[in-house]
Length: 120
Image 1 (tube, rainbow, N blue to C red):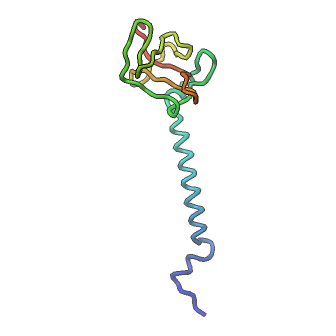
Image 2: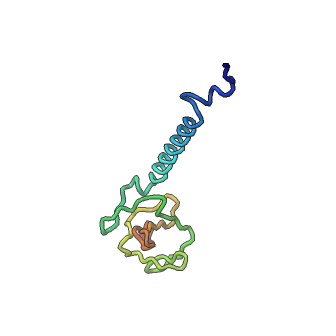
Image 3: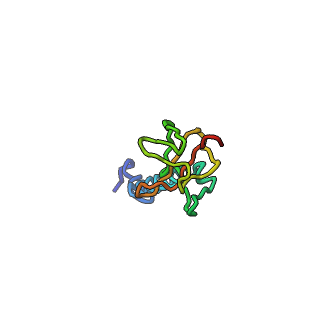
C-alpha cells in the first residue's frame, strides 16, 4: 500500500506535535530574552540601592516623569508630593531623559527616586 507523499511529513520526527513543541520553545526563549533585556535598564546596570538597602530595580517598576513641578522642598508629580529628602531619593543620579524617575514597590509606595535637585 502506498502512502500519500503529502501526508508523510505529518508522521515521524517532524509531526505537527514536534513543530508545535519547537514553536512553543522558541517563543518561551524569546520571551525570556526580552524580559532579561527589559530589566537591563540604566537603573539595574547602575546597581542603585535606596537608603534602606533595597535594590531600585528596572523598567517594569520604574516610571519616568517629564511633567514635574519643582518646589523649594520637593517635586510635585501627577499631584503627588515627593520631597527631595525622601528616603528613596538617590543623590546625584540624574535619569538619562533629565526628568524624574520613580521606582515603586508592588504596593505602590516609592522605593527609589531619581532626579536633579535644584542647586546640585
